[in-house]
Image (tube, rainbow, N blue to C red; front, side, top):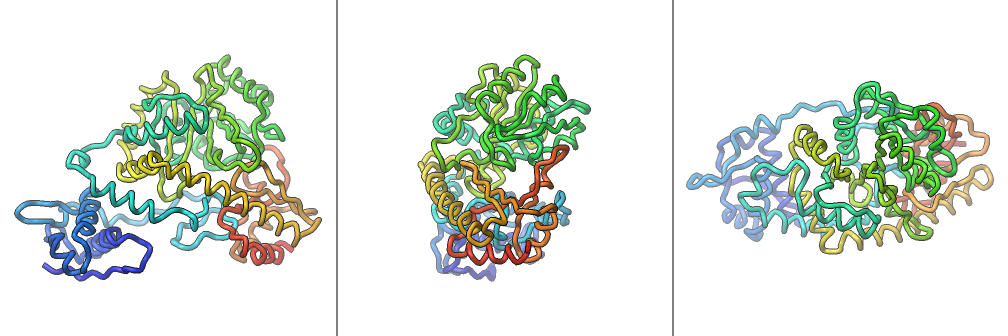
Length: 466
């Protein structure tokens, strides 16, 4: 049979991904129906005037997703169940104050949580993706390990040993669906309704919502210039089941948890029999001195669970993260992982593992650290030049955003809304507070602000908040 398909040979997406996308789309709209035969890879390659291996890679990817099947002598056909799977109704995303529906648009200036997408090595990534697809064996299409592929778990353990001073076996590493996947596992294994959980105040709202949904009693603990005030947490809930912290770059203030307080926190957890969840979300990006050691690297009592994510160092759509658990909890977390996820797709895990093994991961982080240092300094200088003494820029030694405070401003939520009206994604600091006043200010990410664009963006911000 012939299958009408066009490719953008000058586009950024690899040809095999374009072919796979066209086939998926044809299945979704009913142009291809279950059981219908597809052209052979040789025939389609001749039709499109491309290498046969490109079509083979696309068909292998579709087969791994369950979209098509290879049946000799019938050839390659659309899978029998795929028509029902593709037609998934749209669902409303989890919304929270200030959330927006996800659209395939360019990043909004100052948008939090995004790495420099313009600087991601897409060609190298696509090459590794092709290699991973071509190397798929029949056994790779079987059930997958709920804890993740061993090659990625091994690569993460090796990386953390050198970069973060964490000694752990690959068996302690669980691959998760980003940080939210790690939170889901922690909630399932450790938290019961009514359990007190320390949360930094101000802090990460998605973590707070996750624990509240599990029925935990969230205990807001004030953050100051040295990070979490451990003594305040002990006074409020001395037997808390868990403390969720961001010790390297506290979110959102970016202050670091001081060494005395790290030791105090670890001593409390050991004595109380409590656990600590360390969210080390952007520790790679520090611009003054060496990166701070992780809390986990100081943990002699095995009370710290360490969570990391590839969303900040690679890209958010990857949806991969990891959780390092103490040996005592390995069995419980493996059981929870098998019940909650049954494993995550292996193709992306293979590519990340190859990216790490080849040295490209470390090189990418070094490049981003230099790039962010330049963009951070450029945006801060522009803000000071435009606003003068009407605002202050708090520049912590690390992180991926600036905290800007405006003189005389008493409603940062209003400033955030005004900024959004002109297309800027500044986040109000006060929206992340629970019980303690952290002042007024805007969180502004610099990662996607090209220096040549900084002046125009800051002038737009000036017009919005004036």
